[in-house]
Length: 473
Image (cartoon, rainbow, N blue to C red; front, side):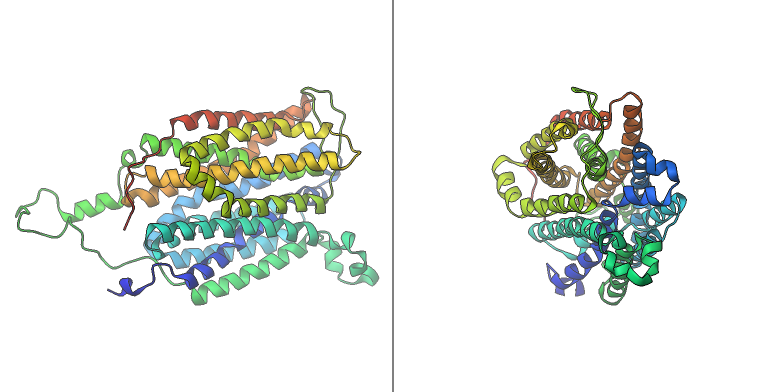
């Protein structure tokens, strides 16, 4: 058959696919260093004077994108089953282009929300890319390598994105000579347009490259299975038709998918995405927020007053560290301690990190290395926990899936739960931040994250590892 002639590990197709995949995390992460400043720039005067209200809007902007993905993730997965992976992926790339370009030129808070929601609704590429990878690679080792490449591409986007956002936003302030003598007036009128212009150009290139080179991976040819092949021992009048069997395999009941082991892994994804997305998106805001009087142990207020460039360096450094840990420490340590122990230990590290984080504001301004060291320790601890927690969860999800026929649906459920956590997390944390300021406890949001992470660590003791899983192929 033609399918058998295809390579088990199609390097060229994977490279093109992951180059296209890179655009979305690049666009999402690029706004992190400057989003607070952009909200204060396009908003009214009250937002420039009230960091708490501006921070609340920032959390809602992040939640809007994730919420849109939560609504449509499974929808686009189903559509791709009907019309193919390629057209759905191209639509997602086009929506990323439109959303990124429009966001850079937004001049109001509603416009910012609109151009965050549009790509979230129209792009299901998180699900589609994982599906394509599973379809074009053959053999467990090849699939594991390809999924690792996908995660690396995602991390590269989160490393490079903040660099684009931190260094290219507000260019007239960072590089005044660029705008001297009325040159490039649009950069002064739209100070946050430049990083979005660069990324939208990359999106356009990815869209063109995807259209020209990405092949359709959905196998539309009917396959013969043991359910529709007769043998000498088969009854002449079977009680169940082959069409009914195929229909049940394509649409298995939810009770066959959400088994107890799968449920607890999905719950891990939900809680991890809820608190890690809050950290990833609010931690830079905390670093940039002005200092404020605090009264320990619990009345902790303000942030560290770091510049956008410094914030970008920390965010990008965390991404680089994540890639290095995935390529070096994770494989060796995971093989030594096992996936289940790795997951449980990493989940215990999250609540400790979140609880300690707001106390960084109590560190002295001089010497400057004290706060720098404190931030570095927090970043390292959270990054280490995230690398192990998410990768071990992926391994255990594959192990706990009831069978190969349900693996795609199980992944779809897990990704939808992840998107739900990303949608709910920033909005809920915004409410706790607002409540914290009302009761003179600016750290309340971080304490809330610590509580959520602790709940995730406790429920991980119901996660199981099926050591008897057999290799596929």
